[in-house]
Image (cartoon, rainbow, N blue to C red; front, side):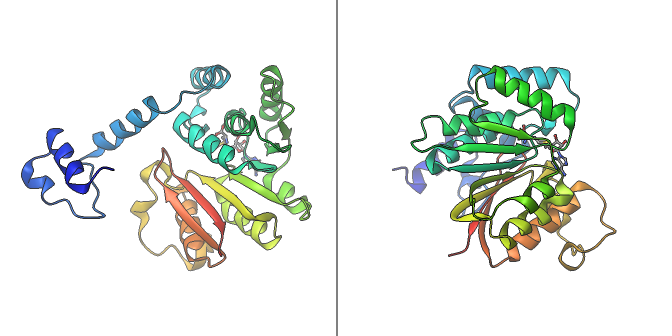
Length: 262
Ligand SMILES: C[S@@+](CC[C@H](N)C(=O)[O-])C[C@H]1O[C@@H](n2cnc3c(N)ncnc32)[C@H](O)[C@@H]1O
C-alpha cells in the first residue's frame, strides 16, 4: 500500500518543489494547475480499458459530424458507468436523454454476461435521434438489451409502473428538468431499495461551483438563466435532501451518484 510519504516524494520527483510538497495537507487539492487536471483526465483515459470498436466508431463519427457532439458522455465516464452497471447487475435500467445512443451502449456493455435478464429503456424527445439511435443499436447487435422510446422524460417517469422498480437510472436529458426527474423517481417510489441514480453534467463546464451565492429558495427562482444555474440549484437541493446519499465525482463534466438514504 502506498504511504502518504511515498506519494509526497513521488510528487516531488514530478517537479513539485520540496517546499510546496511540504505544504500538502490531508484533504488538500494536490494538482498544481488546470493543465494538471486536464493531463490527469487524459492519463486516466489512456490507462483505463479502451472502448470497444462499435462505441469508438459512434463516438468518432458523432464528433466529426455533429456540432452538438459534446452532449455525449466522455469515454472515461462511459467506462465508469459501464463498470458500475456490471458490478450492480441491474435488472431494469432507465436512461433519460438518449441522443445518439452512446451512453446507452456503454451501459449495455456493463450488462453483457449479466446472470439475470436485464434491459435498458432509453428515452429521447427528438424523433430523428430516437430513430437513428435505434438503427445503430440494432446494427451493432444490442437491440435485445436496449429499447429506445421517443417520449419526453417526464412522461416516461409519470407513466412508469412503480411495481417495476428501477435498479439503475442515468439522468442526462434537459438540465432544467433534472430536479423534477429526480423528485418524481423518489416521490413515485420508482427506485429499488438498493438502486442507483447517476446524473451527468453536475459540474457543467466548471461553471457551477463558481456560483456559490444564493440562487433563490430551493431553485424556485424563475429568473434563473443559464444551464449552470439549473445545475447549481439541483446540486444544492439534492445535497440538502435527506431522502438520499450522494457523491459528486469530478469525472469529465461531473457525475453524481445517488442512492436512497439508509
Ligand atoms: C446530453 S444529451 C444525452 C447524451 C447521451 N446520454 C450520451 O451520453 O450519449 C441530452 C439528450 O436529451 C434529449 N432531451 C432533451 N429534453 C428531453 C426531454 N424532456 N425528454 C427526453 N429527452 C430529452 C435531447 O434531445 C438530447 O438528445
